[in-house]
Image (cartoon, rainbow, N blue to C red; front, side):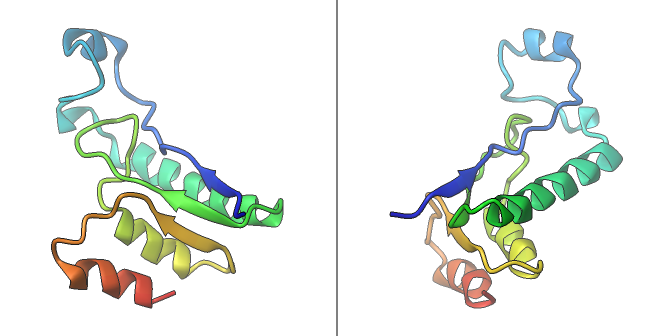
Length: 112
């Protein structure tokens, strides 16, 4: 059995009134995304993945959601490619990757 680390990688810097106005996290306009904050969060999530391996997890599982701040991962294959380039031997699992385009799925995974 493999024990994987998983997080949705949320974006925290969304005004609460915007969430209430939309009745959820879905459909939040991009104008509420601060690239500097987003970059810092992405880096911290990548650091967490390396730390999880140091603490004994067998791998990291990624997923993707589109247009939702509760999961910044819109293209998990790209995140997997970034993680594959970090100093880590951790296994990567891309949860529910759609393979309508086999090259899109095969290329990032072949980099590992």
